[in-house]
Image (cartoon, rainbow, N blue to C red; front, side, top):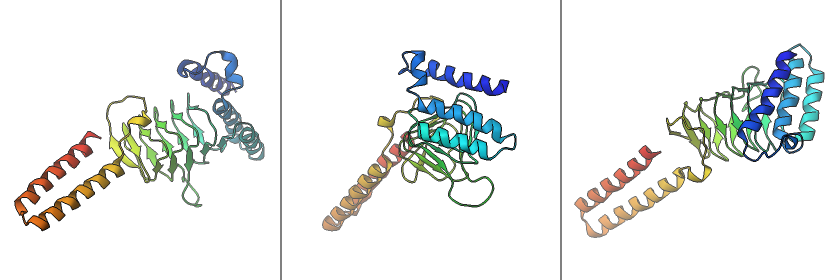
Length: 233
């Protein structure tokens, strides 16, 4: 019980330390459904670990009704996990979330099968899951990793990486920074599309002129540009 209250106290302090939108302690009690969803989870999980089943699920149902956040009481959530805004977040039964993870609204940590055993994601410490992201299956999001908004992640993400897109592609960062700038994420699909259009134009021009050397030169330049873009990510 002491551990339960200590974890809840740490959840409140975590918001006070890290959320610039918080202007008073009073706001914590009315404007942070994600925080209260964690509190409901802490209580339900404590009872679930003692072998109870109905009461924890009932507490979770009440928490879901009040916060619109659905967390299964059997999930494993570490310390200082913050669900920002909270609306529409779903965390499955076998999901594991380590310490200091930041989760935005509309995120799903879900499964892709109905089989028994581990079927939900593991999110390592200091990771950020962007708004609307779907992380599905028994996969691992490495520590200090970032998932871009509305991405659908179906494979493991290495530590210190950013995953973007549908399905998500992994971009190596290795900066260790905690910030996630959604406005600065690379648009991989757009760049590939432009590359293909330019390559087709080069081929059409070479067919008209019969200048193979020009085609080889321009094709080489396009490949270099594309390779530079990939490396820059």
